[in-house]
Amino acid sequence: MVLLLSMGMLQAQGPSGEARNRVQVGDELQIGRPAEIVYRNIDFPAPDDIIRKGGSANFKAVEGVKVVVVSVKELKDGSIKIRMKPIDGSRFFGTHLYVTADLDAALSSGELQG
Image (cartoon, rainbow, N blue to C red):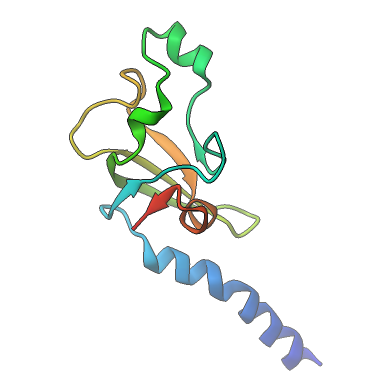
């Protein structure tokens, strides 16, 4: 019984380990087009926050932007959260240097491309 339980726990940990091995700090990704009208898996700031800081809330401008991963963190629920910044050193919307994303969900939805 203990053997079956431990095998089940190893299986549950497998996918998150694969995701961590897939994307590491320094890897380059590209922001894709959202599956819906808005990005669900990349944590972009709210439009009013962008405008309040003097930026332009044009979400179409981020499509195709190449980014570099600056940190990878596994959360308690097993999901992988990455922090990224534009490769060219610019800021998202002219205001934010970094954004975060749920790695697996963003890759599967096409919001991030490897």
